[in-house]
Image (cartoon, rainbow, N blue to C red):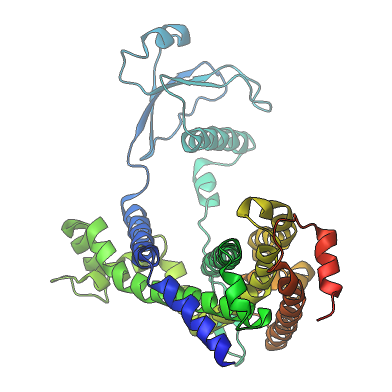
Length: 446
């Protein structure tokens, strides 16, 4: 055990003292905080402040009502011909020309939008929606509905989603908040397992090619060396993850003050009844922006989530999932002489992880209580990502306990399996290994 601790200490200290580790540990929270500040900035300012001016040539005898302008699109009806407008478009103050031919109201066709530059997807969608509304209103009026009744048909519906918690009380919930947490947790889990698992493989290859492994094996057993390397790098990843959490929350307030000017801050804070507008701090601006902006409902719903539980469960699945996959990466590293030879072995290991990642961010987020989500969160190859994605939506305690138990059994079995390959492969040189050859190593007696 003392030898394993020495290897863990060596692996941990040799990595945390690297300049790359220190730089990325501090740089990553700055990038995250910067993105966070940009999200708040654009949620207040609006992503698209530009108003496109569209000249409308209406030759349709049925659609006599005019398209309604808004903050993003201004419609100007003109009497000029479509062909003449196209010739003078570059010299005019119009951004686009919208041509409405005399089409059949039941089968709209032949509508054209022409500009000096390609129209964006959002502009195309806005104009299409406006024309569809115009056609629908015409059909409703034709059926005898007055304009007043037509206006009364339009309603904005806001649903307060709630769920009954474990205590039996109603709790506010938000699909948006749960999806955001699930998406972030899934991406981080996938990134960490891949990043630090590959580090284990590279470390094994480096020691093997430099022949330092021959000296180390004379003092420690191959299993001790493999476990020390795996646990040491896991501690490096956990250290970096915890530092990222602390630094990200600490720098977020500074990022908000950088991306939001003083006038905007006063406006945001003054609109919040809970915050004084006299001299707003960065934390006040951040809180008011999140409360009053489009992300307000999601931010309030985040307060109802058990973030401490989510973080603790994330750490467990990170460590367990990392141990599960890094043992396989260590076995691959011991079987090859260079990193270029790892490609044939990497794919079988990566495919379950990629499958779990893809399905978790598509199927699981849409149906977190379905059978697919359940089995993905139970199978050790996919549960590290699937369970942390399901967790914000609420997972029964017995399912969480069962998933944890299966994953622990899974990584113990994986470590044992990988160790039997590692003990032989670590001393193999000059021979390209194959899956068949590695299977033989597994059955060799000590």
